[in-house]
Image 1 (cartoon, rainbow, N blue to C red):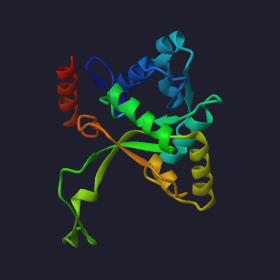
Image 2 (image 1 turned 30 degrees about the horizontal axis):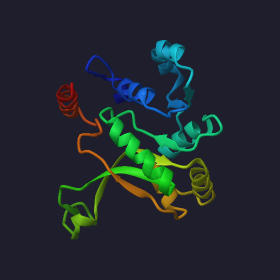
Image 3 (image 1 turned 90 degrees about the vertical axis):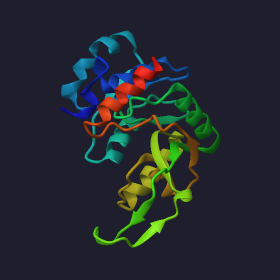
Length: 206
C-alpha cells in the first residue's frame, strides 16, 4: 500500500492534507495527482466540493507535478505543491509560504538544519564537513507562480534535466526562491517509526 493511504488517526494520511487545504481561504482548486485505481476513496468528498479534480502520476516527481499543473483551471495566481506524506503542515505555514511566493515569485517551506552534515566520495570515509549555518531542510508546500513554473518546465524539458523538488525547477532558470521558515513538526512520514511521532504531534494539537 502506498504510504499516503496508511491510516493516521483514523483516516488515510493524504486526507489530513486534503481537508486542511479545503478549509483554507483563497484556494480555488485542488488537483490530486493519483492513479485511477485509488480515486474512489475520494468519492464522498468530491461529491461535496467541486474544486477537486484528478491528474495522473508521471514517471518522475517532476512529471507528476507537470500533470497536476496542466489540470489546473485557468486564472490561478499561484501553484502550491504539497506532498501527501506531510500530513502535519499547519494553516499558518501554508499562508506564510503563499504570501512569500506572491511577493517573490517562488517560495519554499524550510527549517534550519540541526544535524552536522558530512560529505563522502565513496560512502566509506569523510571528505569534509559542510558548514551547517548555510544548510536548510526543505519541506512542502512549495509555491510558484504558474508562468514561472511553465518557463522552468520548458527549460527542464529542453535540456533533459532531472530535478529533485519543485523549486529546483525555478533554480534552473535561474530565478530567486524565497525561504519561508516553517516548523520542525512538518515531518515527512517515510518509515514505520515516523507514524507514532506523527500521531503524537496530532494528539498534542488536539
